[in-house]
Image 1 (cartoon, rainbow, N blue to C red):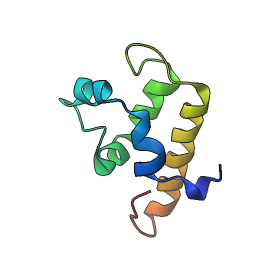
Image 2 (image 1 turned 45 degrees about the horizontal axis):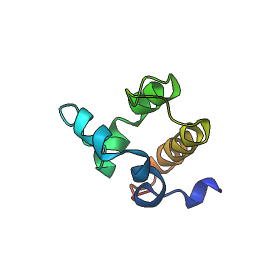
Image 3 (image 1 turned 90 degrees about the vertical axis):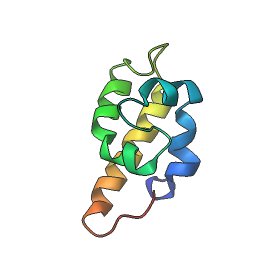
Image 4 (image 1 turned 30 degrees about the horizontal axis):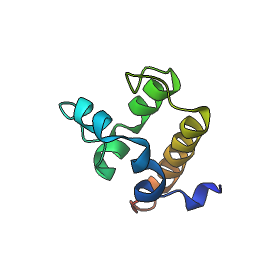
Length: 84
């Protein structure tokens, strides 16, 4: 999957189950592009360490997908803020 094809709604949002969203709602909204983008580095650190979600780690492919999306969002943030 090419990095430029990653989109939040299609590729990232589905990684967060309703259970995960409810669990984190006091800190931020995992269903929200803006919230996930704002907290992306902390979210990545937690999923990469296997600490999130609390009931078991993401598959390595999902961790890499999130990191690719994060890297793309950071590289584009200087130019614009499209919903990736």
